[in-house]
Image 1 (cartoon, rainbow, N blue to C red):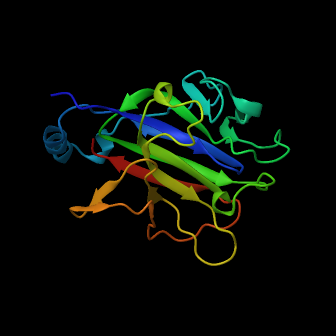
Image 2 (image 1 turned 180 degrees about the horizontal axis):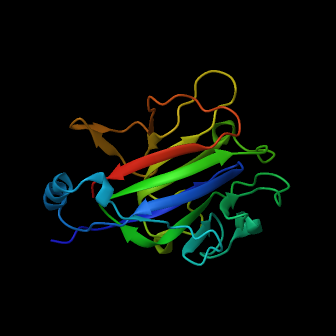
Length: 214
């Protein structure tokens, strides 16, 4: 049996962010077989593959709301100093054009490690909830299937948040644009479920690791 693999993508909201992305090689075997093999293999056997090459976006697809696939609207996604960067310095104000960048491959049974940070100021007119807000869609629809004016792909998102300097604001929350999840055997219809992470204020680098079991 071959499992349906998962599209990996990153979401762009009204913010500035730098991302460095690393991912393990995918395993498309049945979950029970993959689990048994995993128990017999130690972490030292993991084969990490760097998805982002630090040079260009040739392995990525870009989709903005209201724009055709491949249009890097206002040069928002870019490579600077070896980093994948989301920058709004070419925007006069936020106009509702949510954007996503999709890796060309599909994956199942993998670990994803991301180093990220938020810098600069939010684009003028951006919604409050989008302040220092980005995300990793660990399971989502392919870029080619998104409608022209679709805000977000149907997906399960690992939400990445930066602190505002006031109160708690956890990162690595789970959000579910266009779908739902099951936790502890129960259907969860709430859009976002907060994690128990601490709040990361300022421009510091944060490392997040996600394990996906198919």
